[in-house]
Length: 130
Image 1 (cartoon, helix red, strand yellow):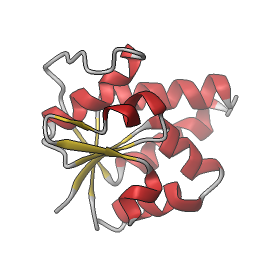
Image 2 (tube, helix red, strand yellow; image 1 turned 90 degrees about the horizontal axis):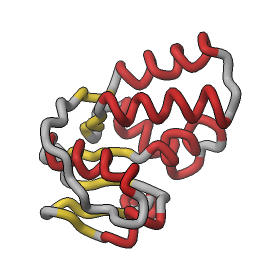
Image 3 (cartoon, helix red, strand yellow; image 1 turned 60 degrees about the vertical axis):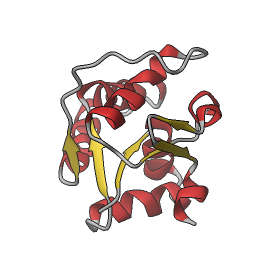
């Protein structure tokens, strides 16, 4: 089965706007793909929803509980410095390497510019769906 790591911007787009990001989330929810996540990724999603989108803490917790129903927690033990322009994005590469993912799905130009890391293909949502 295909294993993917999904960037925060894909989760946020799926939550608020649907479209191709929602299709990817639905593939995970339907167990058509395995979605890997980490503590750092979930922390970023939480902070983005609370701070940038100003959702109520209860709503954020409900969203994170929903994500927990179809994501596989990965313990990241190795620090990787792959994204020089935005080191904060390394968390997605670290999770993908630790979980032996096939893809990282992102809308972030810093990650997309890499195209590939350690055999893991980095694609945007539309590219992944095709």
